[in-house]
Length: 445
Image 1 (spheres, rainbow, N blue to C red):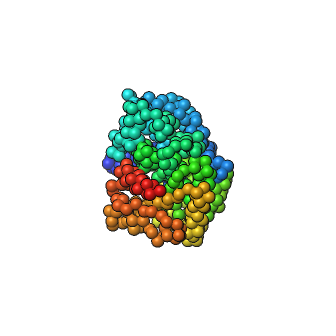
Image 2 (cartoon, rainbow, N blue to C red; image 1 turned 90 degrees about the vertical axis):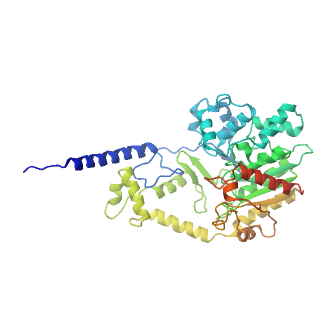
């Protein structure tokens, strides 16, 4: 008997097989792994776990940039072209939080690059937010007129070293003897300057350009527990005239209570990515925390019909397994347990977890007899902002954590005008708007 094959069917089968093989190879090159059922830019399973040295947690429990960022990295940077001289830093530092862009932006401020790297040209082309900053204008004026005031020379030094010895993107933390009003800003990624292009277009640098001495303590992803620890540690060192807590309603409400402790960071950064050190509110050491997050992204070993073992053999079938999980056609015991614990933790969330650190912050200000200002930064896509072009904060929740402490809210912030398109941070318009708002508050004191 002769079997006749339809040529079009054969070609179709071959093309499907080729496409599947090509997809498998491409996904593996991209970083996907057999047995891992989801693609994530935040976390991945690695063969050898390596902690990166971007941050340290000091003896006061304060999370900040470490010596590799403050001291070592500048030596590997070609400031003329904005390129790394040696790729060695990739072995110890995670390309995150834009610290390399900070150095490049400030280098371009001090010395315009004649031949900027392709990375810089591409970033400027893609980012319509990039432009001249207030600090650029102030710096150019200082250089043009050879200004020698204490404030002017502080800016010159800051431009050449944007990270201070204490591990923050700021002028040095010290008790400067000057008649210029000294303002201490404390917060998270907003204070750090995320989404400002260039970085020195942030509201902290805008205030510095206005003529204040601005000491900025902003670290991405931190919380009021960190803010209180910073206030206790650095207010006596700086002796500022005004201290401003910038409270972001998006993630500054603490889901569990924590006290900053030495060598216990609130998050880990490694070649596996980012992961929280206390996913259930209880601190985990680095290796145990990695194992916990790994257990949530790999296909379980055991199942009744050996489906998991078979689908774990390729990347494509692993991703299909993830789709089946979303459709509740397969189960993942570790994920189910984690979801229950997280739900329990968030349902038990109390305003006290956050408010006690706000009170500690206020107490640190009172002990040093320093004026304190509290500002609530609204979340761009919060629950109250679905239909309005204006951003509206959840004042009921804010009142719960601030209690009888007065806080201020910037009015007139617009979602599409003042915030970035890809995240919740201010764009340059938002940074300008917010710095003007802070200026009006600071002038009262």
